[in-house]
Amino acid sequence: MLSLHQLTCFLATYEHGSLTAAAEELGYAQPSVSEQVRSLEQTLGVQLFRRVGRGVVPTTVADTLRPHAERVLASVDDARQAVQQARSLETGTIRFGMFGTARLYAGAGLVADVLARHPGVRVELIGQNSSDVFEQLRRGRIEAAMIAVSSVTSEGMTVMPVARDELVYVSVHPDRLTHPITPQRLSQAELVMPETTWRAEDSTRIVLRQMLHETGRNPQTRIEVEDVETAIELVGMGLADTVMNRGAAIQLIPRLAPEAGMVSLRPRQYDTLAIVHRAGAVLSPAARLMIELATVRIQQVAEPIRLRGSARRADS
Image 1 (cartoon, rainbow, N blue to C red):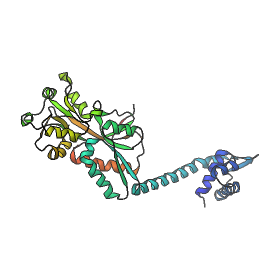
Image 2: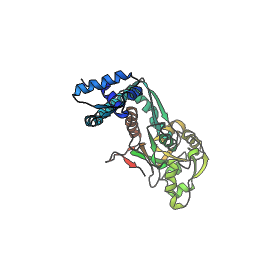
Image 3: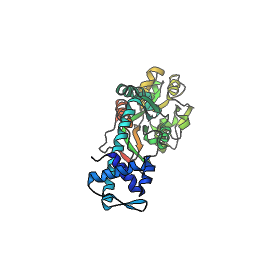
């Protein structure tokens, strides 16, 4: 019966043109390799090599067998890797990139979803701002991530928009919330804005700058902070107003600024949230699981995007 061991010895001998060299590569004794090749020839009823000096030369039958043997062994290796990945999904570490605001209202639920399915795993949610998460993805430290796509370039990435989250104006002053906020009113507002380290790449600020383009002004920040929780607390104190994702506002206002309210911008503005991974990447079962669960979670708190195509790819 034809065996994987026979095919392994055959391919090593074919590649090196020597039973001795094949044995050295495989870590076997030379007689063992010779026996496996001879047994394969007997099983198939053909001659695979001719002895020439101290080496061997493959026959035309060996040339025919070679690609089939390579495919068989490659399939076995793929199967082995698939099993190992499945095993790691039960006991290993699952890493997924998710920018700060999305983690705020989906992160804990996402971790709970993972542990409900795979209680033996260790979970890491990685990243702060979308640009930070994207850099981790670009460097290969994570396989996939959820980011706000307006803040990054998609070169070499597959981008799958899954939801959009409206940006809202938040204030403790009721008179400022009677009507949607126009670009002119926004350009005159004094704001507290989070993500100060990433202010140039922050997706919310990018959207606001585009909104105010026709006024010739940028959003006026009175206070700069790092985290959205501090920003909303300062709004609650009446020290400034802010613009933030509706999903985050719904989570934070009751807890940190119960006197505050929110109103839409005019025209309405949105952050687009997307799953991103390297173009052409073969994702592990863990990455596919995180993509599935993160998409469900984020679509529960933000407006789902239903695409006819499965993804948008940018390779240039």
